[in-house]
Amino acid sequence: MKYINRLLEGRNERERQILLIGGSVAIPLLIWMLIWQPLLKANSTAEARLEQRRQSYTWMQQAASQIQSMRGTVPQAAALSGSPQQQITGAAAALSVNINRIEPQSSGRYSIWIAKTDYSSAVQFIETLSVAGMTLYSANITLLDVPGSVSLRASLGTTE
Image (cartoon, rainbow, N blue to C red; front, side, top):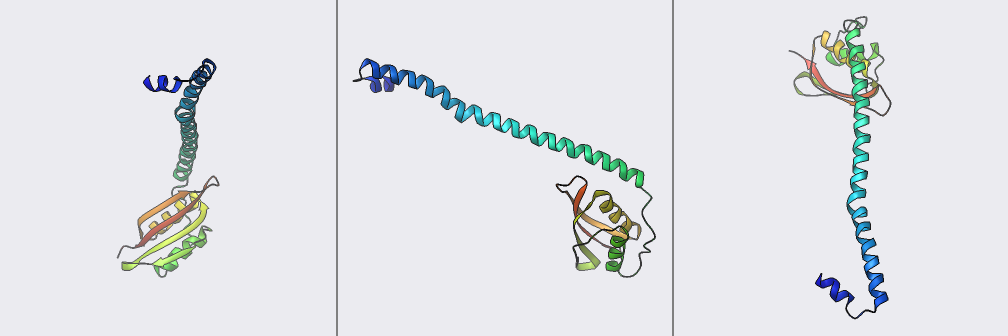
């Protein structure tokens, strides 16, 4: 209060009124701009993110039910024989999966990168290799912008 009195001291009546009215308008405006508006923006961003995650969850549930219905229909026509790398490329060819990179790792493991494929093909690819006797050590499936499309990074190898 002392600060306001010192600010108004030595001013004429008109200047005092202008400062008081300006302050009474500026304080709520500052509260709005510095506190309330960022809260509203954060809330709308959180709602948009929640809706996106709900859509992804719905899509994943549908994809899971499709995979359950396809279980057991893994193409065995691609008689996976030969070295582990030949088995990997054979399974990919049978499912029309485009492998971007295969890197041999230690102890018979292979790292595989697939930039873009559909979700069911990625899961069938992994299942085909599992049925052929390969062990999945790790997998990272990332949902892409196009619905149903994923990228896959996996580490698998023989169970020797």
